[in-house]
Length: 185
Image (cartoon, rainbow, N blue to C red; front, top):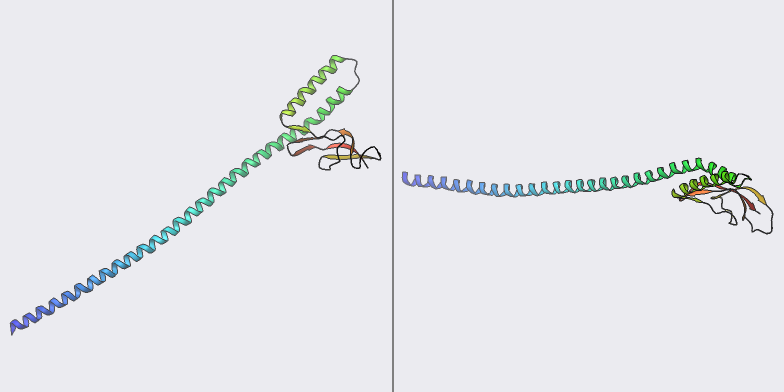
């Protein structure tokens, strides 16, 4: 009987071992599934973070590109503004040279010298892109002209520039000085 009992005990121990091993294997399988699930979740989170970082990087690159363009445009506008201010200071000198050229003089060599200086100054200003505003016979435009006199004359159309008292100039699209004109009514 002892032998039978011993066999029963061995069988019971064996069954318990099998049961425990099966449970452990089942737990291991469950653990593997949990680990895979956790890894997939972590992967998704990391993928989202990397996409956010990439999106943030792209936005920063676009902002920086816009900043560079804005700075280049501001630099160009500043250059034009400085050149325009400088030219505005020189224009009265040009006006005085024109008056000197048109004045009566007995000394032709002196007048020629004045004319040469005027031509050099005008050539220098032309290289900067300075343009004279066409006025005579044109329609009055308050963006280009400054009307200082009006005249009633049937020989001219209404709002036509009759006479130019002071030349106007522009640098590109920027008006340096409005032309001072007489306009027909």
